[in-house]
Length: 239
Image 1 (spheres, rainbow, N blue to C red):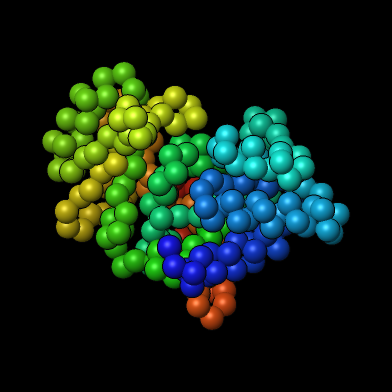
Image 2: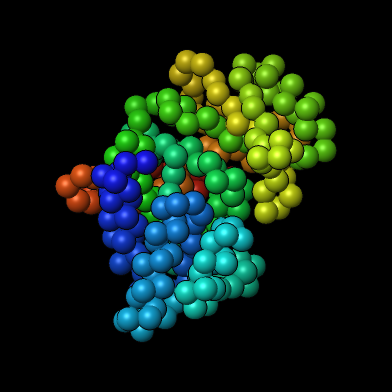
């Protein structure tokens, strides 16, 4: 990643961190952008006396936040989140997203569905005309029957790759699930594809986040753009 892109990512993350106010309960996303966000929130806790409760979407985010003395709670210990702050791999003009490059997509989607406001933090190059142009679509699946589930996804037209760790064994999420990264040639309708994938036995969740963005914060070479999202809330939450 170039220094310009990294600077844009840092600016966007810092702008998102300024949305947090004392007394809030905040969903903390996963990945490199979220790490910048959590670092900035830790600075505000230390320097400004900011007081809030974080709900992390991954063990990595939890460890980082604890090291910065950010108080944390489990999702089931709170009634709702005031705001959720997370990144994305791709965002289209309808604010539909692909997420999950870091492998925390199931937890990220569960947390996003509990938040009153969902903020997505990206850099300009992650805005695309159609999803799937730059990033494969992660699908979180059961590790039991992994190859069988992969064959079912191939039968739907996907080019698939079971995500692995350097040792060559399947990568496992914090919840103990596997990830199959899927690439679909040509344009697809995200809502239709999500419904089709969700119907496959062995699939727990997809990296298609639909109707789960209320505000897009975009880091650019010149500064930060904040773009309110339009569309149906909770479309990706089953209700």
